[in-house]
Amino acid sequence: MANQVTRTYVATIRNHQQVCEELDSLGFAASKLWNVARWTADRIWHETGRIPGHAELSAYLKKHERYADLNAKSSQRVIQELAEAFRAWYTKRQNGDETANPPGYRKRGDEHPRSTVTFKQSGFKHDSKHSRVRLSKGRNFKEHRSDFTLCEYEADPEARIENIQQVRAVWNSGREEWELHLVCRVELEDVDPPGERTAGIDLGINNVAAISFGDEAILYPGGALKEDEYYFGKERAKCDGPNSHEARRLNQKWANRRTHFLHTLSKTIIDECERRNVGTVAVGDLSGIREEESGEVTDWGSKGNQSLHRWAFDRFITMLEYKGEERGITVETVDERNTSKTCAGCGRVDASQRVERGLYVCDECGTVANADVNGAENVRRKLETAKVPPSPTDSSSVDRSNGWMAQPAVHLFDRESGRVRPREQVVDCEP
Image 1 (cartoon, rainbow, N blue to C red):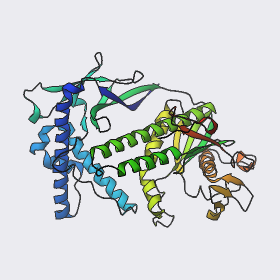
Image 2 (image 1 turned 120 degrees about the horizontal axis):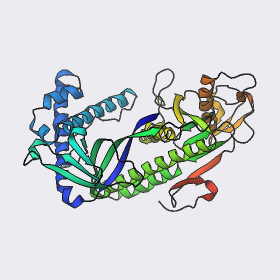
Image 3 (image 1 turned 180 degrees about the vertical axis):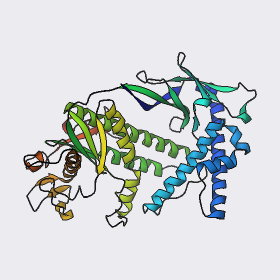
Image 4 (image 1 turned 90 degrees about the vertical axis):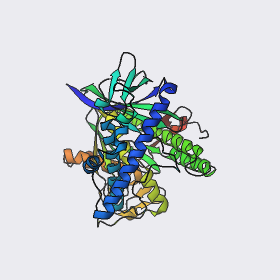
């Protein structure tokens, strides 16, 4: 039986010169509609003390002149994005992030930026034979009823461009051109799991991921991400302000490199799991990472808090989920609370046992381990125990201080090849 999943493929526009001006008009129109909706939400907020939802805003603005600049479904999506941005801001404030600001206006001086325009199924037609997609304009931009923007695209040869559910026109500021994001529904045949083993993953900042297989472990340090952060931060400081053309280009390039890193790492982890007959991967749920058991918010310091907000934990887990699904591997999140404080050998909970430089030493049983590997093993055991309660002869009673927890393998991101490799194979090079 086939499973239906959603995949997004990025495609370049072959006839960019012919359609760029029309896409610019649509992108500017989306920004103007966002600003109108933002102003309307602000007025309702100050008069009633509440923020209007997507449906209320859409109904209120349906007859506004800017609403007709785009296809009706595209206009609805712009307003929905604003409502989602307000929700995200409110959630951050609830989680203790006092620096979070509500969504602002999309404007740089007197110039509206090129916002993403989303076309739902009623707003586009796909010609798969000639790799073309026809995008609908709003009523205000049509000279006649059949007016549309015809984009010829080129996607990765391995991409399965079929059953398109949405098309997004996205401005790539790094390359200074529009690109298409094609959201497709793809059918995957049921794949048997590689095996019945369980692996555990502990996510972090210094070590992006530590994975435990129960008898061996691998660390994936985040040094490449930190080097990029330092390099691009230094280069942005040389620019004429954060909104300058060069600063935006650097931001886009930095974002692209982070995305490539996360995709490469998630694929590598799934490959390692398949090689070891792992059928289930447990990942620590970090949704409450900034909260103590008492409900109070943990202060990780200014740098630590900034790193937590930049770290796309949910995005990385999503990558693991859909890459694992293609191999028959299930990815499940488990409560991570106390996994970093608990000894994987005897179960003693003591925060003081995690000492400097990522070393975990248990005063009760003498287990010595890398602290992140200890956390990953606890994550693995939580899911394993939930499925099958441990018995006296279960592997949970095995001494884990025999080397694999204390000295895990270290795999680094190799810039030269763009892949993750064992440390001894990586060649250092400049960012």
